[in-house]
Image 1 (cartoon, rainbow, N blue to C red):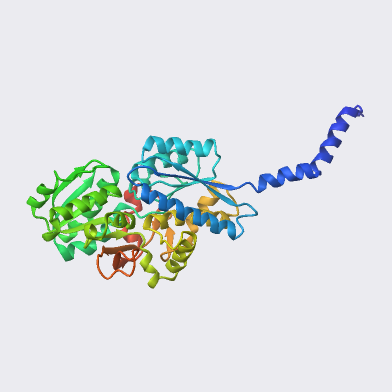
Image 2 (cartoon, rainbow, N blue to C red; image 1 turned 90 degrees about the vertical axis):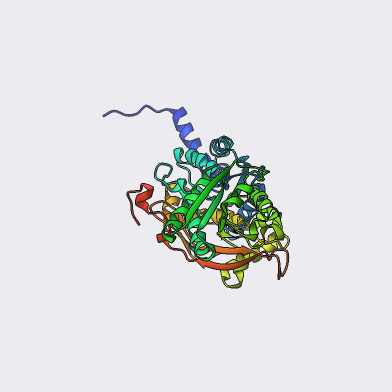
Length: 414
């Protein structure tokens, strides 16, 4: 029989460790670790052509953070939003996202306002198995080649948005169509969505005229558009581009013979461009605050926003910032964890109504299935400065209006 030699030094170390582990000092360290904030990175273009929309995204996202914290957080942990300017540049977006993950140690990423930047953000998050919930329109982010278990898309996508507007507008205003298109993924995908929805309706594309993103002068395009004599002109652009092209098309007199529509009729663009420039222009949106008259969740959301921001109402892209963050934080509670895979599983099962009606993420691609609102800008009978649209129709949430899982390259079907 052998015995371990007596080692007073070893016994002292073990004893000291046992005492330390039960001491207030070590308890406080453990407690600090478990109450560390849940960090959400939020890259968005605070500067550049989409800055107005990005500012609204940020305000509404902060509102979602505040609500989460005021309702107890998760196991004593509060949430924190880390906003970064991606400058509407794919490389900058990737750099900022990498810093958020590796330096700031964020748990999740929500954000983006461009089809190009969201793909670069997604690539960084996907490779590091960090959930990214995108709040900007894109068709590509749902395709299998860019997708992962950690990729979610809270925003509408171009196929759904353009399709809804096409199904409403083309039967009413005519089938001879010209597109004025921002020459990047958003514009291209919107045109594709209009064409696919328009073909069964007998729509004829007279031209797809492309312009660079951030263009200030559209005068070279307008005579050509007028000469083609379209029934409908579709402005497939966004933000400041939409404001400038709508103003110049109005000043040129195109509305006298042509109905002007746009896939996404932005609330912020309408405010910036004014009533005259946008009068009669029709488009789609994910949300309009005026829905509060018929949708209780919209009224609740609007009132929270008004209280937080001096009576202002949220924009469409602001609402997406709110929902994108709120969904992730709700999934943390459902999963009882901040581990990305567990939160991803919870997000896939989430059924929610944060502000516009029932929504859920389609399982094969994590696209949010939701309604599309058709609105038209008005210049008369406005109750106040926020009352800028008439709601013409709401296309209900329906997976059949999305591209199929098979087309996107997913083997799993819903």
